[in-house]
Image (cartoon, rainbow, N blue to C red; front, side, top):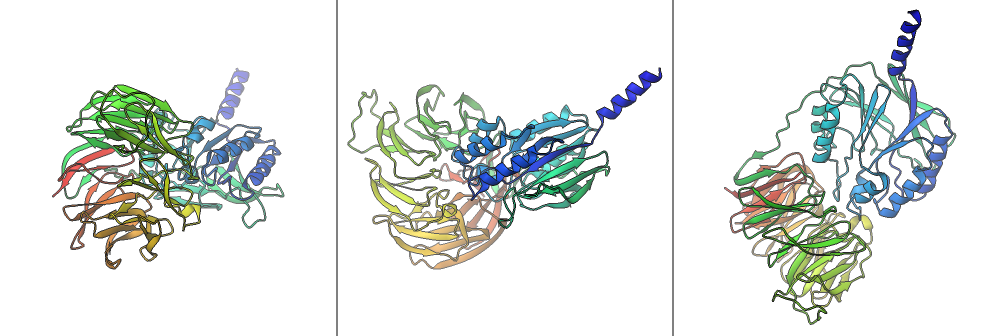
Length: 613
C-alpha cells in the first residue's frame, strides 16, 4: 500500500514538474550584415547546453522576408539539436515577395502549440502581409486559438508568444486576451523591441527579449528561460556562453485578465446598404461588376455575392491570393501567389482557362482593350479584345489575351517585386517597384517609355502607393515622406515636396485639380496640383498610420481608409468626420461602384456598401 501511495506521489510530482530550461531567440534579421554568421554562432552556443528542452523563435527571421533569407535561416536553425518552434515577424511579412507564404512552406505553419509538463506555449503570427507599423492577428488564427483553448485544461499555465507585444501594438490584441480570460495565463513573450525588458499590460507580465544580432558590433546573443514551480528566470547568453541573469516573473501570481469591449462595427454617418463579415483575411480588395461583388481571400477562395449579400458561387483557386483580381467582358481574372493565372465566367463561376508562371503573381491586376499589333498564334472564338496585365514577385510584367491566355508581351527590366495597382492612362502603364524605381511602359508592346530612379533606398521604394494622374503628370508618395510629380511624357520630376509627412497614400479630386495626401500621423493634406500650393492641413486625428490606400473623391468629399479601422471623409470646406468604424483591422481603399454607392472593406473580410448621408 505504501509503495502504491509513493508511486502516485512521484507520478503527480512528475506530471506537474516545472524545472526545465529552453532557449529563446528573436529578431535574427537574416540578410542584415553578418546576421547569418551570428545566428550560426547562436545555434552552436545553444547546442553546447545539454539541459535545454527546446527553442522558441519569436519573429523577424529575415530582414526583408525574402525567400533566400528565410531559406538561409532554416538551414541554420535546422542544426539545433532540440526541437524549435517559430513564428514570423513584421519584417517577414511587410516586403515578402512570396506574399508571406514562403514561411509556411518552409516551417509548415506560422503559429505553434507546445505542451511541456503543465505548461502550454502558444505562438501566434502578428505580422501583416505587405503592411507595417504594428501587428494584427488574423481572424483564422483567432478562431484556431479559440478552438485550441476549448480543448485545453484551464488550470494549465499558458504562455503566449507573439512578435509584437500583446498590447496596443497589435490592433486586435483584446480578441486574444478576451479568449484567455478564465485561463491561467502566466505571461506574454515577444521580440520586436531588440531589448531585454519586463513590463506589465492589463495585469499580464510582458517579457521582451533581445535580437540575436550584435548590439554594438560586440556580441550576438539569446536568452535562456529557466522555469521552476513558482518562478520563471531569464538569462542572457553572449559570446562568452555564460548565462547572465536579467529578470524574473513570478509564476505563482494570479493574473486577472480584463474583458474588453469588442464592438466591430459602428455606423457614424453613412446610409449602409450592406454589411457583410466573412471573417477571412483579405490582401486583395473586393471588386464590383454589373451589380455583383466578388471577394478573393488569402486562402484562395473566390466568391460572388449579389447586392443583398447572398453568395451565388465560390471557387477554390488552390493557392494564396494577394493581388486584387479584375473583371472585363464577363471574364473574372485572378492570380495566385503560387503563380497561377485563372479566368472564370463572372456569372457562373465556371473555370475557363488557367496558365502557370514560375513566380508569384503579386501586383493588382488591370484589364483593358488591347490596341496593339501583336498577333496571336491560336485563333479566338469571340470578338473580345480584352487583355490583362500582371506583375510578379521577381519584377516581370506580362500582358495576356484574356480569352485564350496567350501572351502579347513581357517586360523584364524591374529588379524587385511589383505590388501596387499599375496606373493605365492612354497607352501608358505606370507602376512603382520594390527596386525603388517607377516604370512607364507602352501598353501595346511592353516597351519601356521611361524609367524614374531618383530614390536610391529600398525601404523608400514607391512600390505600395497607387499612383494618380491628371493627364499630364503622375503623382505618388513614398515612405521617405515626400510627394512627387512626374511629367508623364518625359518621366522627369516636375516637382517634389518633403513637407507633407506623406507615406504611401494619395488621391486626386474628381476635377483633377486637387491632390489629397494622407500624412504619416493625424493629417490630411490638400494640395493644388495646378499651382502646387498647400491649400489646407486637415487634422483628422487618426493616429500614426502606415496603411497604404488610394484616396477618392465623391460628391466633393474625399474618402480614405485608416489603420485604426475607420473610414473618414473630408469635404471641400475641410470639415472632416468619421463615416464608418469597420473593426479592429486596417481598412482598405474605398471604391466607387456607382454615382452614389461606395464599397469599403477591411483586412479581416468585412465588406460594406454604403452612400454618404
